[in-house]
Image 1 (cartoon, helix red, strand yellow):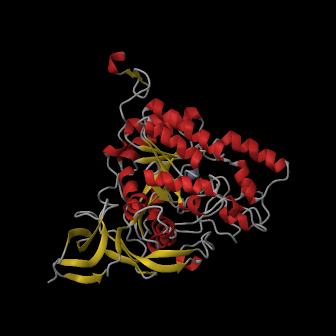
Image 2: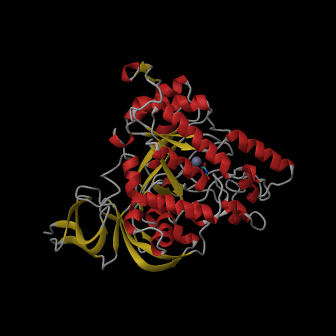
Image 3: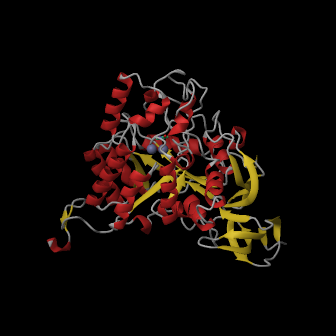
Length: 488
Ligand code: DUC
Ligand code: ZN
Ligand code: ZN
């Protein structure tokens, strides 16, 4: 009888802050032992000196999200999106249950849970709040208590934009009930004004999307929501930071000791505004929000990842097919940028691109790679230490990584339901050869081994990382309506 269900031998194991040569014993889906010369496993895997990394956590991906403003349809199901995640070494996704203006939160969430049952890997949800009426705010406390500990708010998009008063209502509710608020930060009125001016001037192609959404509209919204959160002493996470301007706002907030967290996405690290400027409608493939920026912004983002100002990189996977009347071409193949569905697919490509562009090119080290692809998201979203690390007692979510393997990206390798990848033809070094979720091999050398339905919902109990600072800007706590510090 073997001592462990599986033993992974001879890997360079990234346990968190360091990389050590050791074996990993796995039993009942969890890491049972780390050490040298461990006893036998029912299955023995020779890592052969490869890297053994925590499976990735993609904390921002849109999967089977119901259509909002433009009626476009996701080309991925939970089964295909999480297959794609597994192919790229990711073992946990956090996606979005949405609310339509005037609509319910709870009913949508229940329906969303049903869809997610087809997932191959473990998952959790952020709750999008598009309409924080009194009734909606009353719906939320039990949903947060059930383990949906993060909300998402939008500062743009007609279908979901909140004004400052509405943002404050959501922030206050989150503070009372112990949820993190994640933010899509762009100034809606400025975007609408610029969009109309551009279209009136006949400037409507994909590259003009970036002219309608220049950095100042993002920078201002980031600054404003930080101010609103500071007033209420509520921790926030700024999603998809696209360049230096908005990252600097986060740095300033962190220097003042505020709990303001930030992520960027793969596309902002490897694409620029030039990718939008293509013949015909091709640029629409790259159209995402915030817009793509410059190579100087890319290097600034890498710097902010190294220093920890930005804690993680998500894919913002938004699966709209290109040649599809329900996808990017929903309004035709000559449509103005303003009606093209926003977003790029990226679940599978995220970790390999970050490894190749980050670790192999010397921009980050392996512990930083682990931090920005898994460990920091686990802490911020309350699933640590079950996820995001290789430690005794943690789920055996593991990517065995060949740091030498050379791969040229094709869409087929992405295993998603989308008909393109913006990373087509990119030459990478480093690729996951085995992805394991709770001790089960779910992808091996590009072959998906798992069946839909094995993923589990991760309910997130209260956790300290997102506790407020208990620091208000005046002696008055405006959330609870009481004086603090004896009113002095
Ligand atoms: N922007 C979003 O706000 N959501 C999905 C994708 C995108 O580009
Ligand atoms: Zn967004
Ligand atoms: Zn998004």
